Length: 117
Image (cartoon, rainbow, N blue to C red; front, side):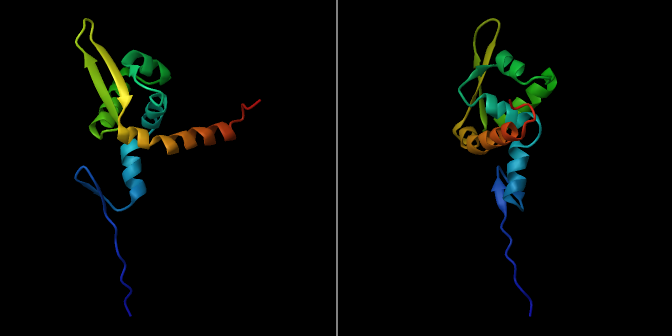
């Protein structure tokens, strides 16, 4: 007797995923994306301030990471028409919805840290 298995397909922005974790990791996976989201948790930040918070990130990687998060709707980029141009980043509602597990990951890192006093 053959057993029927159902396959749930998750779709986001026209791309199909066979697993919801695969979708999540595609959107916010990697080294810099969760850290960028974490630092934007308290509100908007100027581009230069956010880049300083991401210790060790290159300008190219910063721009690439911000563009990817903006493309999927996690962050919003606002450009002010002044000279020199002023750019601020903030979380969208979708980005804010990721904060519970981003903060859980930060808490987990704190809990396993060897540098606890």
